[in-house]
Length: 114
Image (cartoon, rainbow, N blue to C red; front, side, top):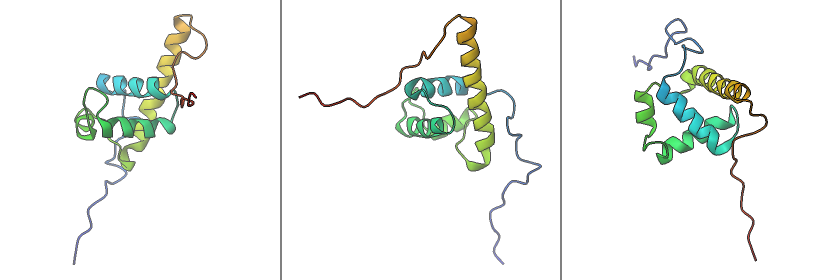
């Protein structure tokens, strides 16, 4: 009889938030958010693309995984919680600093110039 790969039991899976994200992960999330200025889940797509293209410190998926960030479906609740926490922290920093309104630049498609 063949064995299926075991899926982590609910009791052994990390909690949805798993505590605060490591500093390198915070930097990565901020970097990706600065590029697109979107929230979860759209930011997930940007994060995957940035990792695939090694646009953050040359780190790919394996480098990010070694720092605690994975894009696995089983880890999705933790990653979503980390993203929410980082974005909320950024909003609080803007309020504390007295900055109001959007401060992130968003990439916009450029119109052709004739």
